[in-house]
Each structure stands twice: as C-alpha cells, then as structure tokens.
Amino acid sequence: MAVDKRNSEKYHLIIDAAVTVIAKHGYHHAQVSKIAKEAGVADGTIYLYFKNKEDILISLFRLKMGTFITTIEKRLETCFDAKEKLRFLVEMHLSQLAEQPDLAVVTQLELRQSARELRLKINDVLKGYVQVMENVIDEGKAEGIFQEQLDTKLARQMLFGTLDEIVTNWVMKEGKFDLESLSQETYHMLLTGFQKSS
Figure: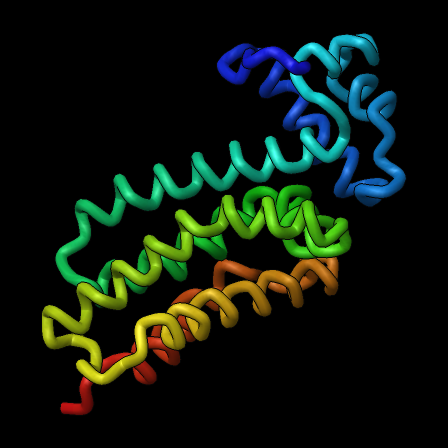
C-alpha cells in the first residue's frame, strides 16, 4: 500500500516526470522505469508514493485539476459579475493548457484512451470543475444577465465541450496556432448564446 506523502517534493517530482513521459511516449508505453528515470529516482521509490501506473495517472490528474480549480475559485471571487466570470473561465482554461503543452497532451488524449474504470475515476475528479462552471451559469441567470430559461447542465456542456474541442484541436495540430488568442472570440460566442437579448 502506497503511503500518503502527497506534500513531499519527491511526490511532485514524480507527478511532473509522469506528465512528461506520458506526453512523450503515451500512457501504455510509459513504463514506471521511464517515469523514475525522468524524475531522477530509483524505480522502487515510485512505489513508496503510488500503487501502480494507473495510480500515478489518477494522482497527477487529481493534483493538477485540484490546483486548477483552487486557482479559478480564488480568481472568480474577484470578478464583478457572471459575465466577467465566464470570460475568465474561458481565458483560464485555454491559457493553463497553452502554458503546459505536455499536460494538455495527457488530459486531451492519453486520459481518454485509458480503461473504462480509469475514465470513471477521472470523471469523478472533473466534477469539481463542472460544478464551478454550473455555479457561474446559475449566477448569471440569477443576476438577470443570462436567459432565465437557460438549461444549466446543457449550457455547461456547451461551455466545457467548446473549450475541450478547441484544446484537443490545438494538441492534434501540435500547438501550431496560438491557443490563447482564441479566448475572446470563444467568450463572445458563448456569451451570445447565454445572455438575454437586449
């Protein structure tokens, strides 16, 4: 059984190494030995922190997504209204993954090729982010900015699905276009779909 050492430097070192190795070789070819070598630790050290390779993948997604959600929630507190929060969500989603191309490869491609049980665990981690998005949409409806009859879940699917597809396209094209430059147009298109007509 792996011990809980999630706050240690080595734990984070292994997570970062796993992102690099999985992005480069793919999840199925990312042996624990390759991750250990990238992290500069012995193979056996990995098992002090993780049960197996699947545990590494889930842990890295949990850690990166947890950090992402915390950052977003703190920033959203400073936003004036739901419109500003929507803009920030779009900008943050695209900029975070543009700044971490290896992580983008892992989240957009490798996580989706994993076994069904693994994907279910990943969906569990995503629930926090989904909730943040739904909260913003509900706030917009309560503030009278977004249409009252807007279906929150459908609107969130549209928001997440749009961002997800843009990032996947960027990853598939190996980062050959400026991902962050699409944030304003994406925001305006989503806002047009959500907001009350004047």
